[in-house]
Length: 583
Image 1 (tube, rainbow, N blue to C red):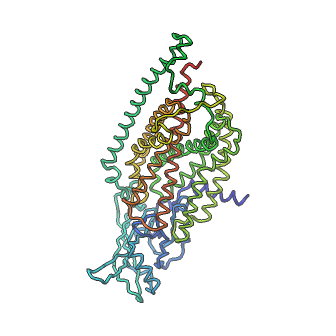
Image 2 (image 1 turned 90 degrees about the vertical axis):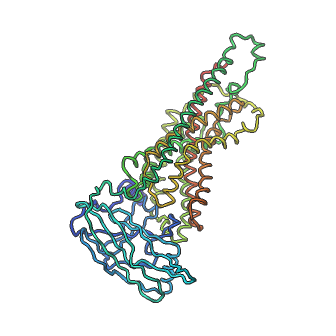
Image 3 (image 1 turned 135 degrees about the vertical axis):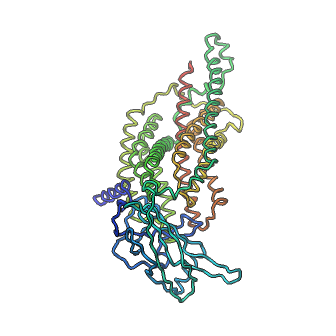
């Protein structure tokens, strides 16, 4: 038990502190560390291996131990190892050999494979990423193919007073790979003053021409106009329709009993005795609704933290923030899931609390561990360390679960009393036959088209930033699209639910959740298109990694959208049935 608490404390500390070992201030001739991170094929960005998985050699300096990553870095496959190169602040280093590599058959084949597959590597200096290419292929216009490797790393480092503000790498000294010979690896360091301020040093890695392209602004404007149209359309159609319904339903005072019996009453009022009937699979629905509220809160706060804290400039900080916020806001899950379950008349609240608290973490962990086994088989740096697995398990068991239980207790006692505006009939009313396009499965499939259309362009930018070499930084756009998605989802789901109820089908609860959540189905379909037509990925590891994590992304999006649709529809249903006079 004590050991688990220690692991938990380490996990929390990893989530809350910065991953930087320095304070970013240097004195003249003070040591500057060059960390070697990963290497991998250019077209498979997520397929990465430790830098020294290739037979590179280290520099002579051995005085610095291995870097200790944060939890977010460990989960993202960051593997920092000291390069052994001697670099001192503002002290130039002329071209200098730091080691030799003998091209034995094994070493030669490893380098040839890396060059043939366009391997790139990543390094860090003072938290600034630096990329370089291992080598290049020269076909020479004939049948003979030669492989070359760059043996000189020329580092140009810009400084502003006592801080590093810029790093550039130039690969030079191209040497042909010849089995049996030796490679002399060298490096060179040049320091130069810069006017770039420390707060703006990361801007060179961003791509404003891509993320702030006119098509991006146009997509936001288009989605905003869709919101205005949908809100206006829903308001106009529903209010006019409901006004007619209210007028027809409330004219009973002018009719005698026979006229009332022979009247033309039909539609959503006919199911008032069944519309608030407890839904099937109450535990699952309430757990999904609780998890959806939880994901909505986490998404909103993380986006705000990234906007105001520029977390995208630090390795693993966004993922660490997600884990921390998810654990800290666990009572939200228990509160909304527990209160809904209590209003539905559920009695197994312990089972519901466990299901709600562990539903998403278990799915995420199960799929992540499956992918992790593949990563271990390929010896990839994406393999999650065992200590990180223990930290995640400790956070789930000792933070998320107890806090969800507290939230469930509060939710059951504060908001768990049934207060339906209509009495539920003892015997369920039979559902009449209706046209095929009014069946719940069709409504579910159609309900996600417009929400997906409102975020379609943003999905392209998010996919490109995650699966290609771009850094997503326009989180203001993401927040705006997030709000637009919520509004569009609510409007569309209300319309779908009204059509369902008007056909005298009272199964609105699961239908509203699934019709809103079906937007994630279209996102996942789009991920197939993106994989085959926008990337050059290949191999079992990359394919499993891509579709596995895109599945998790789509699942979380579907749970959020489904929750938004359910909550909006629930308010709408309660409103219309609380206004109508029921005999």
